[in-house]
Length: 320
Ligand code: A3P
Image (cartoon, rainbow, N blue to C red; front, side):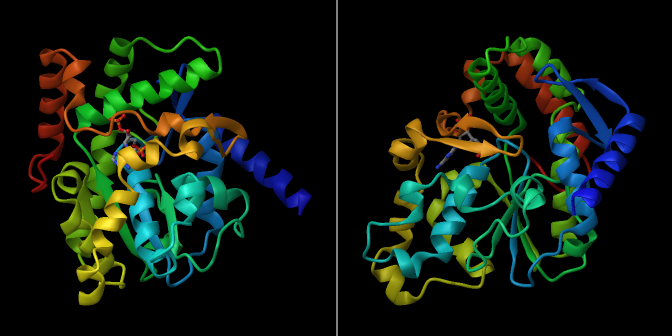
């Protein structure tokens, strides 16, 4: 097995050396692979899952661009599918484990160790763009839930996340203006953002029964309706009895920003993201609001990114 691994690492390095690269948002080079930019520490996992990841037929994929609401979506879907175990009890994994430790990432956790999951929970998450997903997923009947968000809030959230990450590693973060310029040019890990969104949007139009397309804003505005929609899509609708018992509200409360961000595990715990760098869990919880971009970007910057998104999404039927 180790010879196979060595061989894979060699192939990976060979492919990497041929890819165009550019200085990315975290100061390291990002590589252009199959039309998307990647931080190199994510690329090996992506190439590896493209080659050999096989979903279980019951798997449901949670897909997202970073900072669009992945943590919240993981918490909600996890709470929805484990609710019979939650009912009436205060002990739930979500109280003691960070949502990212409840639902594994395909290209990090499962790329390293495919058995690194609880098979009783049919959830796998991914940031991989639709067109770059392993063929085994595209050709399967597995359902996909995609979440996206206003680009301005995504950018601000991303900048803060990277800045906090870099500060924890004693690295000087990129200036907000420099990072914004890169983001507007499509340069971000898993970017361009608009192409990430468009890939899943188009696929959701083509396969509506297979792909559920959501936005962070809609979810915030009517969380109850979305929790029910999620349950229905996942094949575990709430019964009338459950609704009457307030199960939907219980799940919303449990997964709310206030609840999760105040748990000890999310305030002081750390999680390991692929390359074994411990990341403070707290950096996944910042404000959890719609429109916070206006406190950090000038109106001109906002208008510029809106204009880019509008042009890129033109004709797709999607407005973000
Ligand atoms: P902000 O930085 O705007 O606050 P991701 O989970 O994809 O990394 O996205 C992180 C964003 O989701 C952050 O946005 C974070 O605060 C917000 N978030 C985290 N948990 C949330 C929750 N339970 N409800 C709503 N938003 C949440």
